[in-house]
Amino acid sequence: NMKKYLFLAVMMLIGASSLNAASPKKKAKEMTPEAKGVASINRATAEAHVDFLACDELEGREAGWKGGRIAGNYIISCLKQMGLQPLFEDGYVQPFEACHAERQKRGQRWQVHPDSIANLKQGVHQSLDLRNILCKIEGKNPNEIVIIGAHYDHLGVLGKKTYYPGAHDNASGTAAIITLAEHYAVNKPEYDMYFIAFSGEDAYLRGSEWYAEHPVVPLSQIKYLFNLDMI
Image (tube, rainbow, N blue to C red; front, side, top):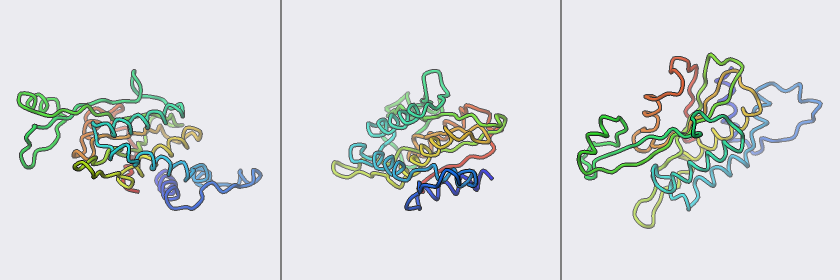
């Protein structure tokens, strides 16, 4: 089933020493759908995604800052290269704004709700332009939807010399959704599949909150949602 297949695919992605072991073409018809899916996932490519997203130059991919924007552009370039369907007129990006008071009191958080932002903007505040990144792969059954998501931001820089690269949290999950999208781009899924790279997760789940309030499809149509984090 779908849950079993996705779990197997992701676990094999991170645990197998070689997922592309060659099989004779004459035996291809004997392989199960699960085996074919796993065989199409290339560990070296997935690791390359992690290496880039966690590299020094991205400085921890903090949402709204240079490293976070570069990470987002990288994901978009991967989706474009695969020829995947964007969901917006201007491409793959669902933009949103997050704000907080410049001098935060304890317990205050980044806000994305328009009313909260309007209130914050009446005083001294900090504002970030953030981006969720989405694409769609059409399946055999368009009436039910599977979403595979992961946040691509991390904690960024602490001081002048320290940063958090975030290979585990969550370059690993981001690499997984890119790799799974690549697989389903050439292996038609049973259901329509939406891949979402969320921003602002480490600012208290702001990207997923924004998406839940502004979904591209009715939430009632979602059959499964898989969130890949620290895999």
